[in-house]
Length: 225
Image 1 (tube, rainbow, N blue to C red):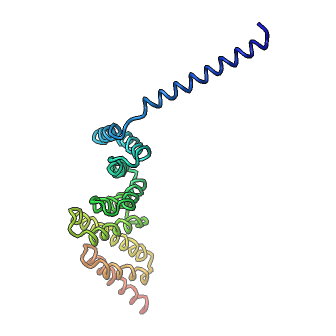
Image 2 (tube, helix red, strand yellow; image 1 turned 90 degrees about the vertical axis):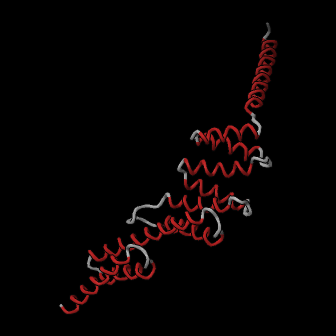
Image 3 (spheres, rainbow, N blue to C red; image 1 turned 45 degrees about the horizontal axis):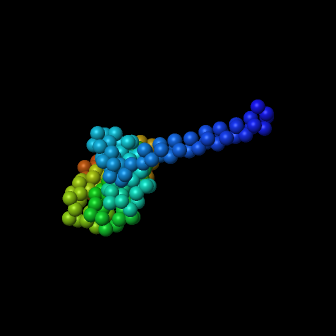
């Protein structure tokens, strides 16, 4: 066999090999291509069994492949729920927020707002840490109570909002006590007054009042000493 014939044979075999790979790939893709109904059923099954990553993958495929499907809106909400239950709270918040943006008149919006608040509430830290998540959670719960006062989630939002206020009051007390221990009585008084003025009906009121009196006593001693 001449070199030229060998090269021609090699090229032909290579082309056939590429064609085989292409056809195999198409066949595999076709086998993997599930309908929206199948993906929804798969996603719900995963979700109900607690396999949230599998559910996330299935719901995301519906959103990507079948944006005009009857299942798409449900898949968007279930995706957010799966992310929430998987404790990916920032991603879940974004998914709920996107759902609210795309479907502002949907009947599930009160639930979505409540879950947005819970995404922040689940990330609330201890009283000696930054309370930005507490403030953001409170804002979502307040928004729900204001805009949907008759919703079944409003009572739950009110309880969670009260918890937010208690955490914020405790945080203010913590800072006030820090200043008090370091003999910065003016700064401590400002924190205690803030608690008295903004959280009067919570359990921290009497503690703030007590320490406000102590600050005044210490300042008086400093002035007379």
